[in-house]
Length: 245
Image (cartoon, rainbow, N blue to C red; front, side):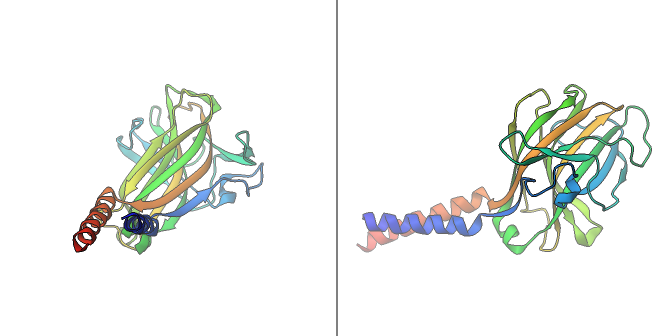
C-alpha cells in the first residue's frame, strides 16, 4: 500500500510540474544604476482618462493614449535597499503627449511584451508577483500605482481581451509584496497573441506618485479545474488498483 501511495504521489507531483512553469522574471540587478527601465527591455506608454480609475481596475472613460513603442520613460534605476543590487522607480510623466485637461487622470505604463504559447494556454492561469515600496513623493489619497497583466488579440488590431492588476498600498512605508492573476481560458486567446507584463502610475493635476518596484515574477499554473481533474484521476487510479488486489 505504501508503494502504491508513493507511486500516486509521484504521478500527481509530476503532472502538476508539467503544467506550472516560469514565464518571466526581472530583478533589475543586471541593469545599470542611473539608467532607466528601458535598459531592462521595458517599453513606455500612456493613457488619459476622464477621471481617476478605481484601485480595482480600469473603470474610467479613456479619452486618449500614446504608445510610441520606445524604451521606457518616466523611470530611474536606483541602487537597491531591499537586499538587491538595483530597483526601479517609476512615476506619472505629465510631459508626454497628448495634451490633457485639468482633472483628467494620466496613467503611465512601463511594460514588456511576451508571446503567448500553447503551453501557456494549456496551463490556463498566469500568476504575477512583485515587491514594491512607496516613493518619497507619493500622495496616497490622490494617486495610485501597481502592476498589471494584459492580453492583446494580435489578429484584431492588438485589442485588449483580458486585464488584471494589483494595486500598491499607497499608505505603506516599507517594502511590500503584491500578487495577482489572469486567466487565459474562455477569452479567445490563441498562440501568438501578446501577454503584457507591466507597472503603472496614475494621478491627476500633477499629483506626485513615485514608487519603487523589484523582483517581478510571472508564471503559468493550472486552472483550479485542472487540479481537481488530476486529483480525481489519482483517486480513481487508487481505487482501481485496490480493487484489483
